[in-house]
Image (cartoon, rainbow, N blue to C red; front, side, top):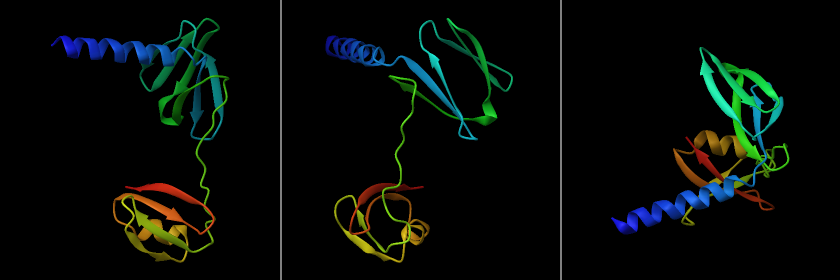
Length: 133
């Protein structure tokens, strides 16, 4: 029991320390617009179909249906992973343990053909890991 309490205390401390590095919470809408809000004194609540975010600067309301994602940011900007593969080139597909699945005409064909799982795909120049749901 003591080990569990110690582990939880260390985990909570590490999470609170890493969260302290982020100064902004960035909201991205389904249309792609972003809104960055300072996390100082930040509170959030849901009212009906809206998310109401309050901080020291005031209130901001977001329609939940139009909210795509929220993420913490050091400087108020967001970065995302982009597809590094050329969608028009042939791709080789491998399982995460290195088993070769096959050669596909392009990335779209590969993702439409593969069953649910995690794969590594390469176009001979770049590689990336994908998840097929």
